[in-house]
Amino acid sequence: EKGGYDHFMLKEIMEQPQAIFDSMRGRLDLEKLTITLSGIEQYAEQICKANRIVIVSCGTSWHAGLVAEYLIEELCRINVEVEYASEFRYRNPIINEGDVILAISQSGETADTLVALENAKSKGAIILGVVNVVGSSIARLSHAGAYTHAGPEIGVASTKAFTAQLTVLELIALKIAYIKKSIDDDQYAHLLNELNAVPDKVQAILDSQIPKIREIARKYKDARDFLYLGRGYNFPIALEGALKLKEITYIHAEGYPAAEMKHGPIALVDENLPVVFVATKDRYHEKIVSNIQEVKARKGHVIAVITEGDEVSKQLAEDYIEIPEADEIVAPILSVIPLQLLSYYIGVERNQDVDKPRNLAKSVTVE
Ligand code: F6R
Image 1 (cartoon, protein in one colour):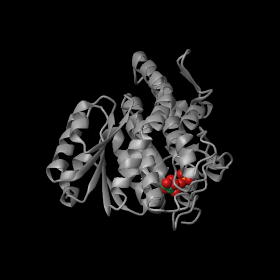
Image 2 (cartoon, protein in one colour):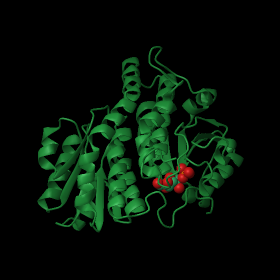
Image 3 (cartoon, helix red, strand yellow):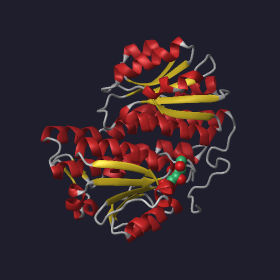
């Protein structure tokens, strides 16, 4: 049942090229340069006209929501807010008739998300769902949406569901941007090609980087704390990397936007602290390189996820993991893969039950 792997978590990490491909299949047509998402098309007019889109989710799905915020604001020029479902539901949020609420959930059963949606729906909001489990409560409550096609996820920590969520959210953002004409045709065609290339690039990471990641895992398995830093589209990936580490290894970890380091977390940096930088080549690259230098100057251990061939970062980092070059808009789907693997292998080194971490449940149906 684990397909020859020691754990479901590893099996599901390895299934990601397929999960991402399946989430695009029948939707993205590179020849015609079209995206077919009937649920979204049905509400296209309301979405394009919306003053704002509110994304509601929890945990890893909330991290996918943060990536979607950057995507939708940049590509569609629509104001987006990302809310923890639990906070949103209890604070009597302002919801007006016709507001668009986008729910993201693997299980489709998360209680906080479900109740937040019920409230918003009763006030006249349009509910769109990005859900993995077909026929689940959130899927049934939504007016429309687009399923992720990740297949069943058994490992408690979310991996392939997350990259499938990012894939579907990219499709939604590009679809809306195309309808709104908020990006030009060349950019649209370029991004469709970039998205289409993601499964092969994920496969390339899985094929080439595991020995290096295992080595890093052995080196840092006894660390007490980790810091994860990223900027822009990679900021939510820093948060997700830290969450995966906490869940799977029980090592304390924090994720931050790299530029926030100087406003506090830099006080933690000493010769005992590993700092994971998500530092792929994008518009912020030079800035993150100077953050790496700041950590090095304080004797922190830099582990960097970098773009293949980035010699400057290779020189600077104590350890690095390379991923293929990609547009920054799709880069998060690639840069999260090494972080999932790092958590997995540290968990294995520490003999933890990686498929069923203590105190966690696959779907959180209590408040
Ligand atoms: C993290 C994890 C959780 C879930 C969260 C939301 O690895 O699995 O943080 O992401 O409980 O669950 P769904 O997406 O099912 O609503």
